[in-house]
Amino acid sequence: EDPEHSGGAVTELVRSDNGPVRDLAFSPDGAWLTWSHPGVGRTLRQIKMARIKDRLIVDVTNGRFEDENPVFTRDGRYLSFLSWRGFDPVYDVHTGDLSFPLGCKPYLVPLSSATPSPFALNPEGRPAAGGLDPLEEEETGEPGAVTVEVEGLESRVTPFPVTASKYSALAPVAGGGLVWLRWPISGALGETFANPDDMTGRPTLEFFNITKAKKAELVGHLDWFAVSGDGTRLVVVDEGDLRAVPSTEIGDSDTTTWIDVRRIMHVVDPGAEWRQAYEEAGRLIRAYYWDPDMCGIDWDGVLAQYRPLVERVASPDEFADLLREVLGELGTSHAYVGAARRNEGPAHYQRWQGLLG
Image 1 (cartoon, rainbow, N blue to C red):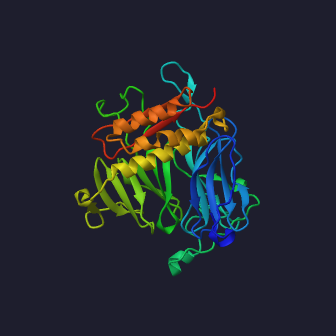
Image 2 (tube, rainbow, N blue to C red):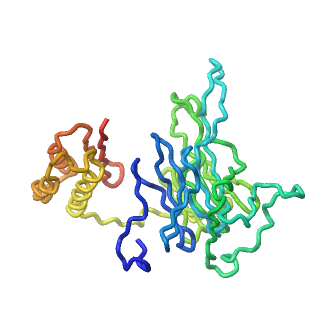
Image 3 (cartoon, rainbow, N blue to C red):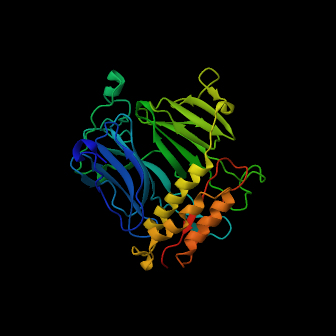
């Protein structure tokens, strides 16, 4: 949606025939949008960009690999993404078979050909990193305009100088750097880990300074993290504990802020939640049902028929039972409802729906 150019109306930017687009991210100046677009095949995805003012769609990658999680660096110089395109086989130590247990790396795309790749060698043999001009954001506190040179964009894709592994949660932080999660390569039986009783295989949070072309480990093991609005801090979730730490360096006792979750008050209105969830479930079923015509079923009529019962629901289990009855009206397979689990935080409903075939 672009209120400035569409009068507040919702317009269609792009359409996919092979599944949902995901991982949407705007450029710092809001002029460009990037996302991971489903390609032909079960897992193939490509990175696309769109210029908001004129709806220009640009292919950043060609769709031959599994490319995901694109983000703009906060200085507006680069687009970065994760890609499963490594095909360096590893020999099995017991049978000699070859497999690909690794294969993922972060990749960087200079948006303008005038921006040097920080990982390349210049004619004098010195890394280009460290020679970039001062960033406008550092001087004024405001991100500068993002310049995208469409021609040759795909040819400027270059891998980060890091070990191939399993990566996720790529995110930009202050100063033009990036953070990501690196996951351990583990065996199915858990014997890979030091403690076989702990098979969680929690990830490591790493920071990459693009200007210095240098990686640093911020947190050895964690559950999840989130970046602050200005990109200078991270909130780290670690076995139930929350702490805020610097986003570009290892935090110490002076720079780490522990967050007392006991101060969080959460007021719940189950009736309102069930009414909202009922409407959302109806929309999701309609959107993802294998036949756009719903096999001739009056789906709005079905939802209207059962809607009064939502007001009589008194527990998560009853709500799940109601949804099962609603889905039963489809007379189809692979349409399930799982009730919320107990004592594991707020209610979370999952919906499974198979596609034709």
